[in-house]
Length: 446
Image (cartoon, rainbow, N blue to C red):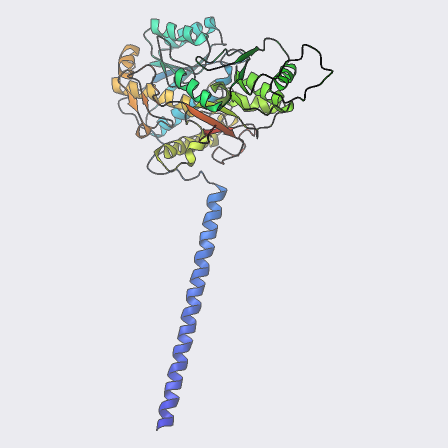
């Protein structure tokens, strides 16, 4: 009897052991499946890191009470005129138009070229006023912007400047000049004897400069050689001519258009200038990287300037600013994928300019459209009054820092030190320009 019981127990134990082995094997299979799924998911996200836009900041932007056939004017500078460095950045206006359309708010953009002159600016604005625009974004910089703003003011049309200081007749969403100077001073660190190389931009107001070198028509290579001598990048030569510049500078500030800065920085690289080089905010234009690359310079150099967080790197943040920039970049990709989408002047596919489309021009357009909605009218006078009471944040669809048009200096955020990276973030459409730089807040000590 005992032997029979033992046989039964052995059989039961064998079946239990078999079930345990099957259970363990099943669990192992599930673990493997889960691991494989996780790996594939991670690879998928790595391959397209910007595909998912957080739902808290949707791509569509809806502005209530905007009348049908609302027109917003955009002034850009084509060719080589003053302010032309911003014509690619200005394409962010088209991104704003698409986001509004996705949200059910149809707005027409009317674009004019000012040629970079005061007369051209007045003509461009006059044509926009005649076209019936409710407000104008002047996506340029330089002295001619004042003529554009004054002409618009005479017609009662509000003007927003995303790339220039405000005038007596306009609002600016660019950083205040004083905060730019403070940030540039910080970027110079402990430099005691900075050398300003003036390529046409003048001296930044209030910046402590020890020496000034005016470029004029001087060849950039010769100019860079002089800077190399004055900063000690060239070993002293006993047989050097008597007029060889002495070493008197421990940092370089470069002021001028983005194109001239890019070409000159390439020359400084070739001359092995090693002291800190600080650029004026013009360098945040897409034209800087293009000029630098075209002149044979390296995009991987160390570049610093002053500005606020309005570039793609902000989308890597996990806060509301990151989500807002991510939504903007999601819209850039949407427009770029549309074969019918054109640039502001209608002579190129938007995909050809998507690498430069900028959040600053995008936010300027949204500001005017929000003012139209608040006014429930396209009357420029009513829109002007409404704009003066408008405050915008990420919940209103803007991609950059908060704006308050209760002050003509609508951007309240102070400029900080920005550094550039040539690292592709994968947030722009495939095929975007390889000469693009991404600017981000530099938190290192200087």
